[in-house]
Length: 264
Figure (tube, rainbow, N blue to C red):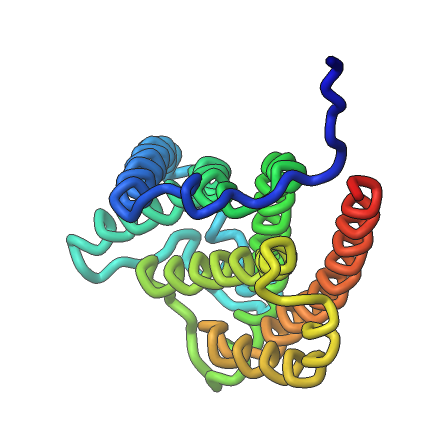
């Protein structure tokens, strides 16, 4: 007797097919260990290429000095013998996290896939690629707007001569890039919540006004520089991403409905 193949999405795992709490914790520990190893390897690479990274990140400082016609030193100034090493370790940590981002996102996706349909698990590679691309886009926009933000902050300081220390300066620019990068992962999070059924496109559409106000408030509080350029550069893309997530969610719901109808 020929067994017909069933088309369409398979049902979610039953209670008997799910892992126990101990198995979930063991799986989480294994994923975390892999992520820590990846961050460590990325940190070693960032430590080796620290001079190149430092020269790249100090570019906005030189641009602001040139735009304001200020006589600034070619290098950042340290006043503490231990500050240079501490800054290098800080850059190593941030750099390791950024370089390990694809591995971290892949492990995150593999950890949550047991709760998805089989036909939804194929989104793993697009999820990782889109997340990395959006993170780099956000970090790039932060780096692009940082000279304007720094110029705004210096202009409001009065008649001063900026002599920035590497600790404060690099912390500001790296936190800004990290914040923009994480903020640009917002649409990926919304789409993932729609796929697992926690929220629906209709709910997101109905909460649009509250979401817009919430995005602006959170960005205003979260951006370390507090300048209007960073506020606009992050708020506007997040609002657009919110609308894009609603559209993608509606398309996913329609596709799932067609697959269920075909299976029936």
